[in-house]
Length: 382
Image (cartoon, rainbow, N blue to C red; front, side, top):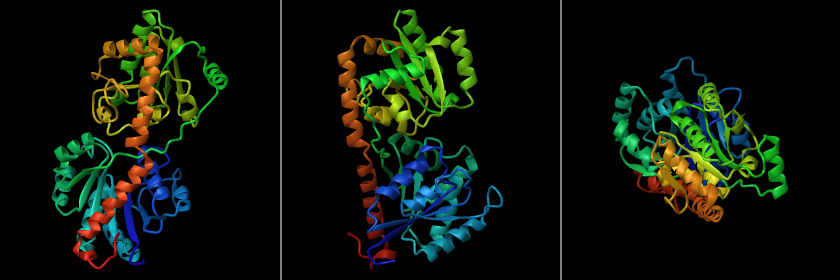
């Protein structure tokens, strides 16, 4: 490793093809300054469906380890060996097991350690939380993807030296002609003149999509030609389908499951809604904002951090389908206001959650940590 190169050893369960974290890390590799930073990923629970090849093509080194049981302390020695073999400047850990293994390895090798917190719930196990809190003082930094996540990390594990670095989302917005949008709507059985409410996300109780169903129910009862498009799947889907039938909304709701054409489908929405009870960030929300959609969000978790209420989106009390209905009703009858809110949302998303800002923040953090580490006093950083 040259004197100017900073090599980050990431320790993570897997580079799964689903979930926001692997995609976020892949973007970090893709958009990093390769002349100054390189990334090695130590993976110990990957599966056949992973982004391993994409990481390699982006310039990362990927090392897969054999984990024989759920908790395998031999992995600490694997991390130590990799840190020495690849001359790691920093160990960067992701998720509970990696956080503990990596912290221990960093102590033994005297390598600065960064813990990355990607969501509101670090781990439900109290003893793991207590164990992690013991390591907190030895880490160089705990990076959280929102203020809400930071508060949760401090509350759950007593995390120290916390810093917030918001996720960076590449702008993958597509622009389609009105005729193509009408065709897309028709392909999912929605008339072109309908008012379309959209949501993207796993169908789990925490997402509370039933609130959106009830808001839609009020819209339809008030004579608004409204439809709901749900992209995603999960254990709550059957219950949501059942409730849509009980509300008499089957003809108004489209359960599309997982789709690869999400960015195209966003063009068919008039408004994007997320009523999650807790949210560590909200990647799908930012993608909707980038697409110029007005967004209506629950006032919970990190969602209030994504918008300015009444300017680049709207906040409603968590679980309050009546307040949701009122905002949706306003947007359905005030087209120009909806356009203005969507425009402001796009500006905010591209300013505050750009991939360039995200990569820059991490690279500056790496440099700052090394410049304050006695082990790297002789290393040239700039």
